[in-house]
Length: 374
Image 1 (cartoon, one colour):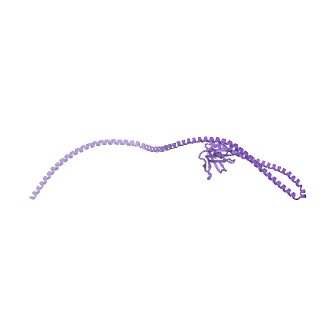
Image 2 (cartoon, helix red, strand yellow):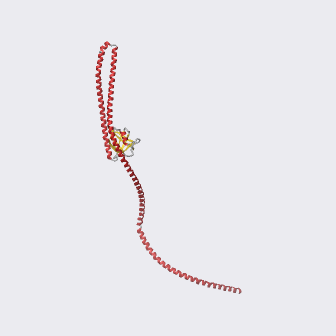
Image 3 (cartoon, rainbow, N blue to C red):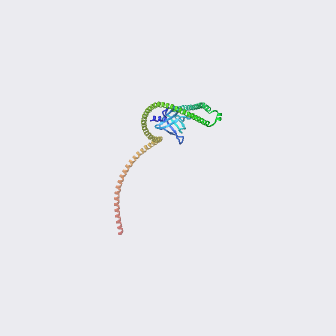
């Protein structure tokens, strides 16, 4: 398909002289500053030479779309704007084309070819101007020769006319209608002769143009025959290239799938790495706290030793206190026993006391009666 489009675009008379691959850009017509990509991927960019017109063109096709069709003129300039990018302005297309190459070497080769083609176009223009000047001089020379021939032809006729019509003196002497008729016939003959000479010029020009067109047609026929074989080879090469590209596309799709899987793995690893970094930060904080605590460990050790000494003293005191408690418990038990005995004795005493109190009460009552009786 690409080969058919390229053949339709270039015509059978043009032959490729240099081919490379690059990303194609065009200047944004609105801003005249930003680059707009004309192709989604790298495409074939070729120099073509038209032997009939003796002209050069840069042509590039992306699928069914012609993205570059630029005729190279001597006033064009190819400019390298970076190590892998170059541009040129096409006034006929009213745009600026830009090409991005995979390497600096390819850009250098393209620029060198552009300069070479530009010089060839300039040389062809100079030659065509020389041919035009030469043909113009030749036509002027041939026209002068024809005029001489025609003037040479007119002289006998004028002589014959003068011999027939007589001299001016004779005309003046004879006069009459016959003389006027002959004069008018002579004028008509002169007009017809001038028209025939102009017609001869037109016929010669048409004959020359027919010869040139015949030569062009024969050359174009020969070139078309050679071009058919060339495009057949190009078609087979394009077909093989298409098959190779399909295989490469399948490989690239597999690589893309692997890349997507690797991206997912990388995402998981990045998440795990973030988690580990967070854990590491927590561990670092814990380590910092432990370091701070480690700084106070000697103080804690000294405090612990003093506390242990105090604990030992307290334990010793505790043992003494336990002994004292045991002694006090024994004393308490003895006191309880004593209190019990004292309570028993006190109760007995109280019972005796109560008896005595009763006796005293009775004795008092007796005394009271005695006092009343007395």
